[in-house]
Figure 1: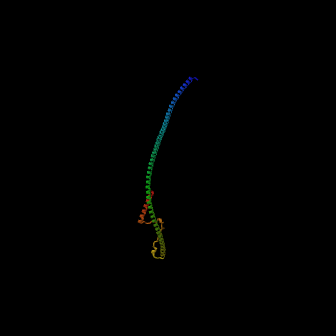
Figure 2: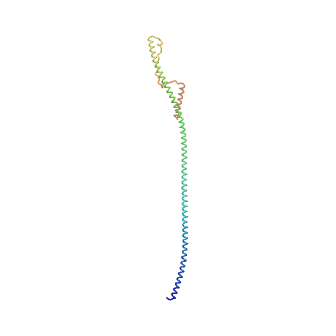
Figure 3: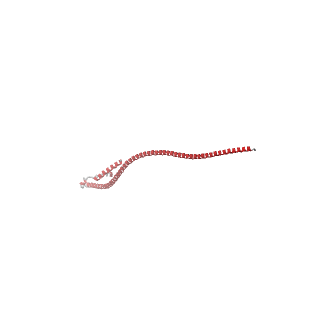
Length: 232
C-alpha cells in the first residue's frame, strides 16, 4: 500500500480517534451531569417521602383528634340526655314521694284518731272491768245474803210447823174441855188459821235498810254506766 494512502488513513484514524475522544469526553460530562441530577432527584425523592410521611402522620393525628373530638361531643350529648332523663325521673320520684307523704300524713291523722278512740275504749274497758268487779262483789254479797235469808226462811218454816202442831193440840184440848163443860175461855178461844204456803225465795220481799237502799241505787247507776259504755 502506498505511503500517502497509509498516511491519509493514519490521519483519518487520528481524526476519528480525536472525535471519539471528544464524544467520550462529552458523554462522560453528560453522564456526570446525569449522575448529579440522579443524586439530586434521589435527594428530592427522599425529602418527598419524608414530607409525605410527615403529612401522613399529621393527617393521622388530625383524624385521631377529630375522631376523639367527635366522640367526646357524642359522649357529652349522651351524658346530657342521661342527666336530663335522671332529672326527669328524680322529679317524678319527688312528686310520687310528696304524694306518698301526703297519703301517709292523712293515714297518720286517721291512726291518731283511731288511737285516741282505742285509748278511750281502753279507759272505758278499765272502767267497765272495775264496775264488773264491783258488781261481782255485790252479787256475791247478795248471794250470801240470799243464802242466809234462805236459812232463816227454813228455820221460820220449821218454827211455823211446830206452832201449827201446838195449835192443833190446843184445839183438840179445847174441844175436849167444851164437851166436858170446862173453862169457857177455851171454848170462846179463836181458832188459829193455817198459814198460807210460803212464797218462793225469788218472790220474797225483804225490807230494805238505808245501807241496802244505797247499795241498790249504786248498782243501778253502775248498770247504766255499763250500758252507756256498751253503746260506745
